[in-house]
Image 1 (cartoon, one colour):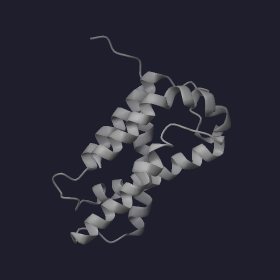
Image 2 (cartoon, rainbow, N blue to C red):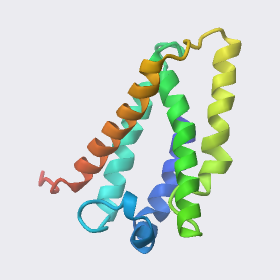
Image 3 (tube, rainbow, N blue to C red):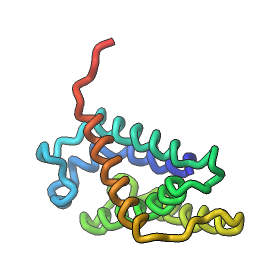
Length: 154
């Protein structure tokens, strides 16, 4: 999961800030409260924070048994669908819209299949359906909040 996320993040870092500035007028519902000013530092910090969260969820110690890991696998695939919806909304390329159909979206069913064959998946519950999006939303707020903090001098 970490490697698939790294491929996706590389695309977001390469094209993110410039494409967001170009497309935010068409993506009002995704526009940050500062009027659409997303800079390279904020984008890099957000990607880094999400990378740490995905790394924590990757399941190295749990072997994929933790609900956190399984939720992250599902959420990662859904995240790819959001990128495709954004690209459709602007009728063009957006950060993450190339890696999503090639890496992100296919990864989730593949990973779920591997977990299922290993006898690891937890049964789906209503609590998880609410907790997953809440966790993703919270992680997004933290990631972008960290990117907006003033740079600290060392």
